[in-house]
Length: 354
Image 1: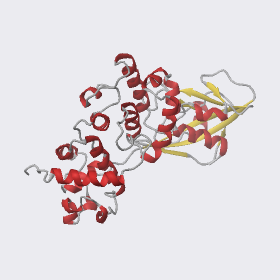
Image 2: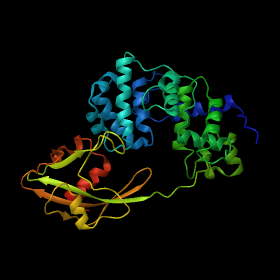
Image 3: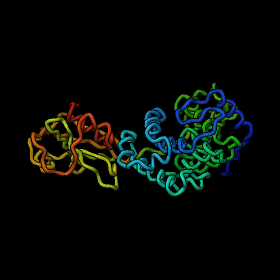
Image 4: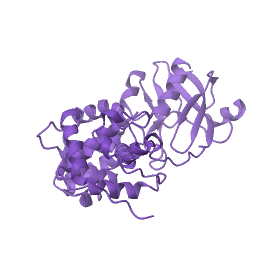
């Protein structure tokens, strides 16, 4: 099949930018119209937005920026502080890479971010899409920032029926061919169009500035594109968790290994995860110490990228802190430590019930 040739490049870009100039979203990391974007803010937002929605990121972004207003400030922070501030956003490798990249920029680059997508890709946690997005938005480098919204717009614009993720290369090529001089505005315009108009379901085609150029709309297949890869069934893992509180209400938390799932984050003591829940007798052998453990009714469920998790929760309050690994965290301080969402669910299940 011959490669598609993008047509009406200038017309499409001009129409989209004209729409964007009127309808652009106001976002906390987006520079006001006519103002130059701050590379630190663009980079921070793009890392946070990886696999996370705009709505979920906004509050975290403001909190980070208030606490660490520059890349040097972030580089000077402790990793545990960054992980604690990130807790709840998920995909915690992003937080560790964020901190590592800040240290590279602050200590090896004089606090100045690389000026090109190629240079930005050398930073920890910055892949092809993120580098392109930062370079386009911060420096107007001619790069196609193809997030899920942009891919959807381009897939429909050219009626690309190749299933994802195989279609990504073609969509990037088609997107690159459209990028005008205002590369940063164009990248954000594609994102905004996909978010507000060219939505996954029931796109508002009548309000779209590109409706006359859209091949999918002409064929009536816009809601079928982009073609998604078939979903693979995620395995289910089960296990037990042990939530210990002392007489003051402080909770015993241990630090996870420095590598692997939820690396360096905190957790209540856990048993191994397998196909089935352990019997109570087996669970008590997995507990961190012997005690009058009470099994809480119900279970905690959580979805990871590659598997689903179900946890039964055992709880105990001790009159004297046992000699065991971990640190005691006051209940009112739980929001200030690096406790990932799934572990917070487990603790809350034990303390507050299902």
